[in-house]
Image (tube, rainbow, N blue to C red; front, top):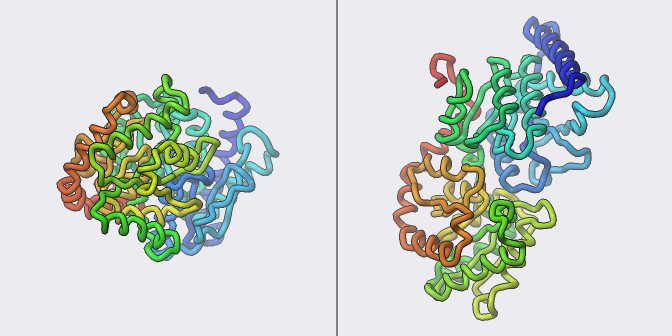
Length: 424
């Protein structure tokens, strides 16, 4: 994607204005900036994974003395219900495409009022979903850095085929912008693309504190423990429509029935299996909630008494707490895998975008993922689960042996290293 001439000119003018604000900040002509941070999320509300990263980051910064926390949204009505530390919301809908020039310059001035600017990179920095989304975010990071804010792209992954526009935009970022890759594979990929320092971190959500005492958590955990008291193995399951785009031969009904058949086969091979469906994204008609409900409806009556779905709405912290009681989880959402790993719980991933492999590399855990094209073949997903169930105690021990170090890497998203300590 190429920016229009008009947009390029606009960005150049905004850059000059941002640099002027940066000069005034540096020379202390402007009033002193307070302890503050502004966040640019990966998307608007609806993703438990995005909420986990944001909540963990804000809690960490508040504990470090950050007094004012702002968040940027793409929709005027967007509200992050579970982010209690947000003091200011800035809407940027149509920043480069509509609105008056005054509004755009006003936005840059608002950004300049913050000490820190944090872009949550997640999986939207390589152009995979949209060059427009990636370039807008990188342009905002560049503008923030030029205003003198301490700008960082927090814990992001980078797939094996980044777009040319994304790579070019990364290469044009100001040298002061920190790049924090959240897994070893992404770290190597972006080092090959860019000639600039990159830091290896772990995902922000590893810092999230579980909500152990909420009514929802207590209710679900009570059911899980009752199942385990009967000698049953409780398997957490997240299925989502992302894989419908990867496995084009399956229609929605076929996709639902395939999951149901895999669990029916699993229960026939191990009659002590109980299922907890765990939605992790509430957006769209084919949300995780509707997918989970459809799978449970397709289960035979003999199995349904041993099935439950996590009620919604729920928070990321509640999901993380619930995961601690499970024996094993199968997920198509990476941040549910992180919630499990953060609690020492074995988890298998149905992959997408090449993200899971890098996550498990932190724990030196091979064989924990399955490609959707392979998973949705008769018997394969069931065999995958049977193998993980048999190995779950060894997997648990391996997770525990690496978890402390991974949590340190998660915190390092917010620790600016000396220039001579950075890898490039």
